Image (cartoon, rainbow, N blue to C red):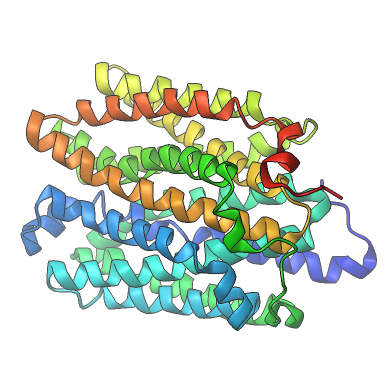
Length: 400
């Protein structure tokens, strides 16, 4: 539980509400397109590799712009940056009501990626500043709502599209929640967040630390599994005879398991600063799910989807916590988390396209799922180096 004195309670409870609202907006636009892929392709003529761009472009921008996160925060301030980014997301989703071509649809995906990139680069530092004593719990809440938003996008978008008789509405309705989040951020975020705060370690110098690149690799290889799952799980089962609604329900179950695991695993791991055992458990869940999808997809689709989802969600949350654990200063820790996400999302952006390429070459998604199984094994090896006693030495930063 998060205990708050009377002085901090009036501020922190609204901030927790904002964490939920912001998190719910960061993934629905990615998960919404998978269940509607057949309709989108029918109207726009997009190929599988073209559809992959709806994930690749925003995730690539999440990666590129995450590197600029500390600079954006210094120039605009955290508060203003978050409000502006959420407004850009609202504009991007609203544009999908009018996107008649593949190019226009990809442009809206780019706007959404820009908005999400700025939020993801700045928001973890805000949380560390205001909830330093309860970081694992709050990061779990943030990650859970982020994944829960993905579940809502997968489940509700086909329903909205069916009611409105068009996929444009199934994607465009997300403008409303994004606009609401922007207004809430303007009301709730403290005014002092408008001022840029200098980190005790220069963000650029973090790129010279091997530990930063190790975190990027871990984050990127795991989130590559997420980007491929949200892009191709629904089309994978549609190829096997499932309806858009049924495949969207499976994707929603996957995303819901992500949210639950992202909330619970950081709570379980909070007592021990060494998060590796919990990380290995999350990676084992991913391995089980990807192996099942590749080898026996019709045996237990729900089990495979939930296993992958729980592993991905918990791993996302714990990896963010590990990055923030490395440094005590909120601005410096936020900069490290932003850089980890930058390199990680650049790597993750490529995987849906690679899965589509493997599908075109082999006629099956199985090769793509096996690729992610190999990635999981690689990350298990990399995370052995994330022992807490190595944090200070890895960043040449004496912990206070």
